Image (cartoon, rainbow, N blue to C red; front, side):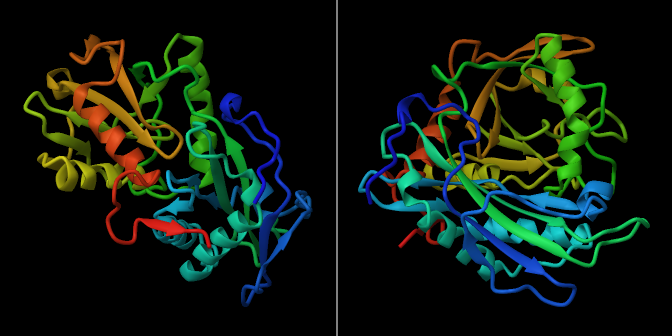
Length: 341
């Protein structure tokens, strides 16, 4: 398959229209078979449930060209499970998990010429999403829904290399107790926009959200989970019912334990103990791990021993191992890699 004439090495992290996408419709009783289409436009009623009451959820994942030339995706079954969880919480019809994975494979296959070559630093971002398409004026679930997948080639999340971030503890809450923080609902991201713009306007790269009940425990940022490394090299990640279960974070914890032989722990993390950690990172699909060098709180600055120049040594090993697995340089655990054939 001949690749598109794209300057892969200089791609940004943004949207580029590709030729094919997947679409399936729910008529109130069942999903249709779905199909690949070249039409990138979505046409819905002005009163569609997604526009009136934000009834929508999404996923994010990537396809890669491995060192030996295969095109693969990373743990799409977990994205399928997480979308099912999101749909159930939002009273949306579940798109079957096996069909979800099949649709991802079909969509990538239909756009193989847009999958960046190995070594370019670029990947193919995959965005499955679902929304309420039929009119709703009373506050209730819609009757009809659409499930779609589009793909777009993207460059590295951080151009020019990864530099440790400066973040702040946030005055706003990301999610309510017993709310929707544990699912990938569009509404969660809409409410975080003001907070991230305010952070950027004040010179910070991201927000550290605290638990809304006591504001003493670390939760996550607007779009990534936290991982911490203790001074004796234990990898710790916050535990909370309102944290989105990041697939990257779960994979990194397995890498830490099974590949690097490190002790791992998922538990409540108090803000007061963050000053005692050696390293901190934000993990997610886009950047895998973004190191954090400084955290500004109401009580002052926390400067991580790993510094502001580069990733800490354990964070770097986690990053190198996971990306090595994704790119085929390191053997993956069974079921982690889905080859596009």
